[in-house]
Image 1 (spheres, rainbow, N blue to C red):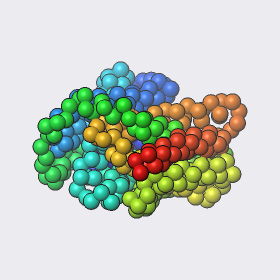
Image 2 (tube, helix red, strand yellow; image 1 turned 90 degrees about the vertical axis):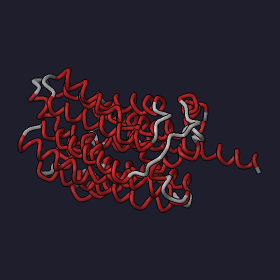
Image 3 (spheres, rainbow, N blue to C red; image 1 turned 45 degrees about the vertical axis):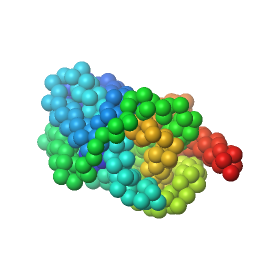
Image 4 (cartoon, rainbow, N blue to C red; image 1 turned 180 degrees about the vertical axis):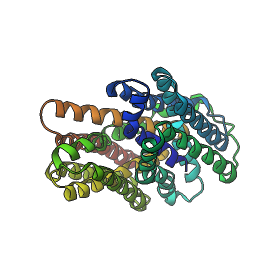
Length: 376
């Protein structure tokens, strides 16, 4: 439920942009800074909160983080001006990464080690289902009775999450050995940085395509506007399918699964320019691209393996890395479009980013093999 609330507001804000831009009396490019403010909150909040709350119990932290998320979205629904909206969206983004990181650790602690990736995938499932159900509903609500309700409904979902965590999350005690310095120890581990870089670069390809998908559907595929939400739902279905099936392989062979997903994404993104001319073929391809997003869950589990005692910071930083990808992908895709290569060129940009992620994965994989040989 927490993932569903976060996924709904993260993606629905993009579709509500024209409506709150009009409501706050600003133009669309200026309104885009509201989306950037949320992403900045995620990047800043994830590591900061993870370090400063090292001595908190995980259950108490989940309650506090989702309470802050509810507050930020409730205030976003009431924002009187553009500048207040910027601040409230930044506030909403602060708990995003830390919440997912801590929730993943709590879930993984409830299952045997060979089911860890599966448990993490169930936490992330809320976010992927949000792209199918939550985002269209929030968008419809925003159009039907006003954009502010698109944020208000997320605040209600967040409060429901607080209740569910209070009722069902296991009671735990803070680790007496935990400290901010111990969490910062994750930053001394090369494999942590390689894993984060793999996500920040390799995942950028998906966002390069996603950011311009609607424009591609209109200008290249030439679909009717009413079909655009359906293609986005297909994309969300791919996200969910990948998140359901990839963990079964990752729990058997974690790093090979991550590498395979990057190869999968490269192929699917290379096909995008060839598939963009027809609504059926582009729908199939965005489904395949969406499946590759299971990389996020796999890398989350990988960070648990390489972070040592600094679990909370490493888990939270994963979401900073993916929001970095969310900035890099659309930026590079936009450069290709501005240079005159056309809307489908975002697929080629995305494939190049996926290859970059694969090369970083390969370095990490080979370093693991060398380390294992030395230990043997």
